[in-house]
Amino acid sequence: MVKVWDREAMDRLKAPARLMIVSDLDHTMVDHHDPENMSLLRFNALWEACYRNDSLLVFSTGRSPTLYKQLRKEKPMLTPDITIMSVGTEITYGTSMVPDDGWVEVLNQKWDRNLVTEETSKFPELTLQSETEQRPHKVSFYVDKANAQNVTKALSEIFAKRGLDVKIIYSGGMDLDILPQGAGKGQALAYLHKKFKTEGKLPVNTLVCGDSGNDAELFSIPDVHGVMVSNAQEELLQWHAENAKGNPKIIHATKPCAAGIIQAIGHFNLGPNTSPRDITNLSDFESENISASSEIVKFFMFYERWRRAEIENSELYLASLKADCYSSGILIHPSGAELSLCDAINGMRSYYGDRQGQKFRVWVDRVLSIQTGLDTWLVKFNKWELSGDEQQGCVTTCIINIKKDGVSGATYMHVHETWLEGSGAKDQSTWLF
Ligand code: GLC
Ligand code: MG
Image (cartoon, rainbow, N blue to C red; front, side, top):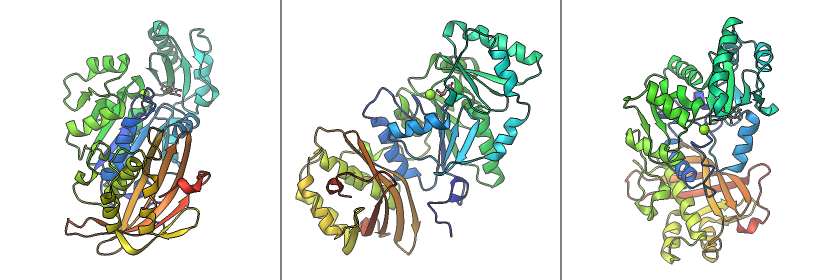
């Protein structure tokens, strides 16, 4: 039987997604000017604590699979349910990134890649982008701002004359992409919406997020909410001024990148919009209901702050954590060592502040839970730790008891960790959970 966490986007949710976020990556979800990645980490914590179990996360990027995978190595990004790459020309599902062959067929219609390369080679203003960015349904160049409009116009005329229906998109004041007319980020989203609708699972709300030219068409898909992050490029703002001004469902955030996305969730009332990272006293964080996911996120927030000495060095914290552990509960450390949950908590004592003033961040990804008893949950997630320049991860499975009385919170029964392939900690002794 396929377990809940291995099922891919289309099947994981039994009901329509509460929220589907479709976000661009560079300069939207990912802030390249923030080496600490704070707004991305804030978004991650919010998503995992409050949305992962009943919502869909979709990344829609201009990057090819090669450059997308590279970005994932550089930044603390979550795993999306659906990945749309190469400006809406490649759609893949889940962690294993299974391609949507139906979409490939749609794009093959009326597309002649050779004709595109033949005609574009006649323009000296166009510089071909790297080999990785040339894809079956995407031919990409650099062209400076001064020439962009003229070249686009001339190309459109030539392609029309030769009977080829293409889409030419200018982004970031430098990138020129040529795609089949039916491609693009907007069309890819429309295709997904149609697919979900056929299954009776059209998301209750969709929020699209972007900053540049290739994101514009996301904002023209019917019924979506949209956020242009505060740092949006001129070409997107201009598109908005000419095509969507006065549409109350689209905002230009006052905050940059992922902070702008969180702002939009609040503005449009799409659900909880307070990230656990923004709460000083973590016991104050109440998502709508206490859930296994929010407990996990809160625990690792506490753990990060403890080691960074950003909270008080108080025995009370450890005592309250131990009170949340089943007395004969066991932690299986990724090294294979077994210790009681209480001993594991006690082990934190000597690590208070050991990462103070250092680069040290902890986040969780794909926190998915299934109810296995009246008040028992089986939760599985990936936990990542960035320490200095080294990043390590483990997959954790745990059994958590959540009392329905709303006061007693969660009890950890059993925790089992194994290193994620190729990312085991070199010094296993400083990996506490
Ligand atoms: C990404 C892609 C590039 C594309 C640009 C704009 O940077 O790598 O090929 O031209 O997005 O869509
Ligand atoms: Mg972008």
